[in-house]
Image 1 (tube, rainbow, N blue to C red):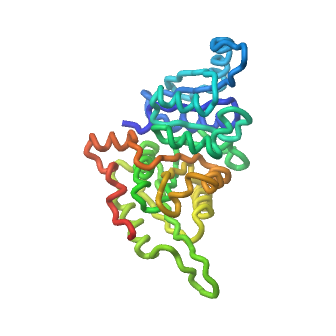
Image 2: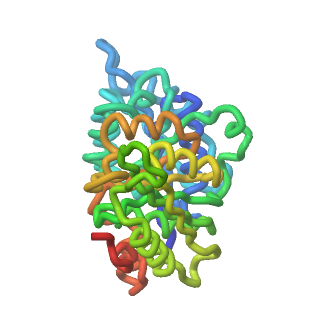
Image 3: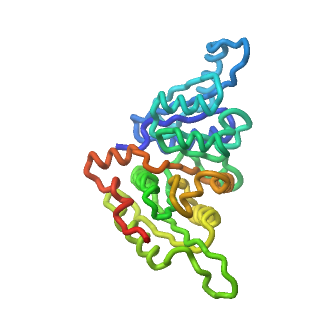
Length: 311
């Protein structure tokens, strides 16, 4: 059973939303997958809800065309983009909500600041944010399976849902899964080895145990641990670039360190500077992967607890 079978894509005809659609196509699982493309028009005085709707739907059909047989539904709604998107997610109950950045109007502005936080807080599914590709990244094919998936972890229980999603996607995409933990450096002067918040050896053992617990025959590639010393934002961005990651999967509401990245200015910095899509999974979210493996008796639903956590 594939992870993402129902995907809702916010569409405003910007390059960012088109790239987001390409990513949604690559993540859609199997021939049974269904994409819903939602475009929000501003409410105009004197314009009826059906006026111009068919023309807008025709434009969506021309702009957002899947590259393989997929069921696609095109929707045009009037209203405030944030409210319409959240209502659309509640109505369609997707497994994944996908948004692009750098749209000049409407939905394209959702991905930074308080609106994004509201969508993340209220959406009952993971949210993927995709930047418009630039420079060298623009030449990489967008509609191909992910080859490298990066999951930054702070070892908190609140990141378990994101870890389950990252593993399930590695299985579905045949991708390499990289687990990254960043040892944050404490400010200190005149010392050769800067002190850290956590014990490096305990973190190394915990990370290795997590990778061993996640490995199984249904993964085509081994899970790789990475332990870095530095500041979380810089190390996440460096790892994503060095490993040429196709997808970054992060949890929200972790208690310390990386978990705090996903709300506020630090989250905006990661989203603004990374060139790969960022998949955000809210803490405690019951994902399709969790339900699937719970029913199958698989191990993915308990992977986050398989390794001891640093005290």
